Image 1 (cartoon, each protein chain N blue to C red):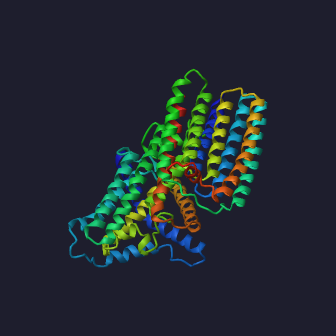
Image 2: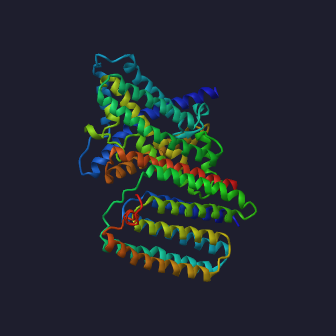
Image 3: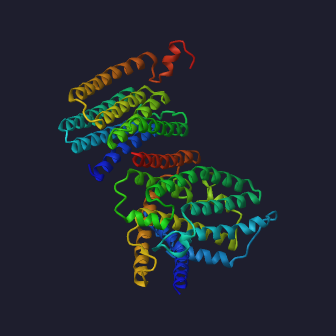
Amino acid sequence: MDQLALDVAHLFAGGLVLTSFMLLYQDRMTGLINTFALHALVVSFSVAWQAYIQQAPHLYVTAAIALVVKALVIPLALHRIIVRLGIHRTIEPVVGIGQTMLAGIGLVALSVMVMLPITAQAGTLAREDLAFALSVILLGLLMMISRRNAVSQVIGFMSIENGLILAATGAKGMPLVVEISVAFSILIALIVIGIFLFRIRERFETVDIHVLHEHRGEQP
Amino acid sequence: MAIALELVVQLGQMLVVLALAPLLTGYVRKVKARLLRRQGPPLLQPYRDLLRLVRKEVVLAQNASWLFRVAPYLIFATTWVAAALVPTFATGLIFSHAADMIAIVALLGSARFMLALAGLDVGTSFGGIGSSREMMIASLAEPAMLMVVFTLSLLAGSTQLSSIAASMQGPGVGLRVSLALALVGLIMVAIAENARIPVDNPATHLELTMVHEAMILEYSGRHLALIEAASHLKLLLYISIIACVFVPWGTAVSGQGLGAYVAGLGIYAAKLAAAGFMLAVFETVIAKMRVFRVSDFLGAALMLGFLATLLLFVSRVT
């Protein structure tokens, strides 16, 4: 494997981590969804490049699924959902972008420190991809706990799935069946979550999940 | 003899930097005015402003201490020395062996410290606001700048700007996402440091938005001229750093002879013009942000610097 192939793979994987940070930084709903579409686009490029350098044609299918489903269908559906919920112009009060960013940098450093030693005998590319994939997953989790709006939590959840795809393709050999079933489960999750969002809104007239906590009798 | 010649070239570089800096500022102003469909001041206006200020008498506040009178000279001197260390039309000049990129950051930091002290010295509340805001910006911009420096030196194996420029032209760099992150981070830091539009507006005296202008409000005459010249130099310096690290092609290497220097000078002027044009376009299309959002902006620059270093670290270890 020549140096250029490695560099391009590094570029896409690093770009994915950067896009995860951009997701953390966005506070407008439409901007958030567009950034998520970019996230999925970067993942599909990354997977396509892996397919090219590993000569694994089935990964092209994975890339195509990521491109169509997650970069087009889901963002469009989310745009429709937020317009119908009437929250497409709201600015979400993100608690302390500075602290969130610092926590994110800490998580990336942590995943690099954890992943590099334990994958010592794996190939260069797999190690790098695993480290970056773990960071994307942790950043997605950070996004889910730092946001109050249910739609942004859904986006955090989807970005975790992108991280999983990055890990699976880097590790050489994820069966296509698994990818298809994962893609479908994500779509179904989107539908379920979409219905759920409308139910929350009907019940509480908002999609701020803190109201749910109060409803359960917890202190906010 | 050879050393004398190198000294002459170095002195020439310092004079070129000093002479070009007001022209660059005038050029950016002119392009901005034309983009807004105004006529704009002539290109040479900054020189005339400086000349006029030098001729005018100095008006000092009654309670101004010696610090207030000394600060402009120190600010100008440190900025000029820092500008002399940056490769402009030629790399590997004799002074550039004396100090590296970290020293340049330190020199600019001390200039900023002097400016903040001078802003506090007279005791007006307005200067105090400017100084405190400047320090808030500095506390985020300097770490971000240092992270960018670390990224570049990890990649090039040296903190020397000349060797960084040389290794950027070499084949060993490849396609690096870290470089792109470092470039964006450095541009954000440069915008903040030079008090350009999304962070501060250099053309306004509106109270709520001022940072740089608030600190120098009490200055007049030749002191003001020196501070203005230093801020022109600083803009040129940042553009030169960006050009020398990320667009290093066409710069002469020390000792190549007069022809190479002249060609390098021409290419350097073209780079400055291109960068100034892009700055003017950027400033025209973007709106100024609130002071309290500056920390988010610079926090993003710091984050980019960190991320660039981390990504580089991963690819070095593996």
